[in-house]
Image (cartoon, rainbow, N blue to C red; front, side):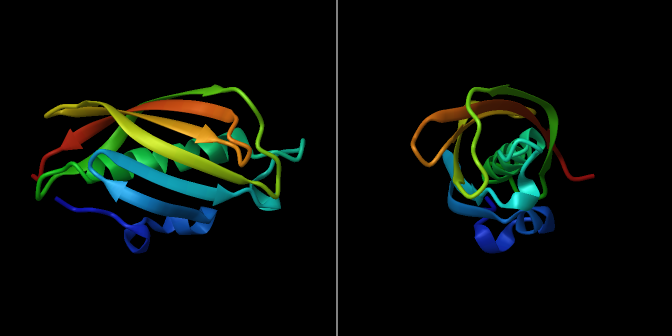
Length: 132
């Protein structure tokens, strides 16, 4: 079972500045410094950047549950936004399984602000791809 720590994250995660801090098959945690480049015109984390953080953690969580030769891809993602995360702050995220099946997995990522307030919940479905 591959476990993807910070050094095995995809180039996009490094580009965004994501810091994956914990990886097990049951839980993935990470954080993202909200730099100005990741902000929207209102001085808060852009919704797409928040979704990218959650998607990367969900993909990492699914990968931590794969068998040799398998891969995964996101086939569905839904985000509920609750509170903005200001530029200069840190977004904290925790990804937990809702379903870990043979062909699909469903992950829920809670993103919180530095003050602990819930900023968003992202629920995504990962398709398990078998080697050809």
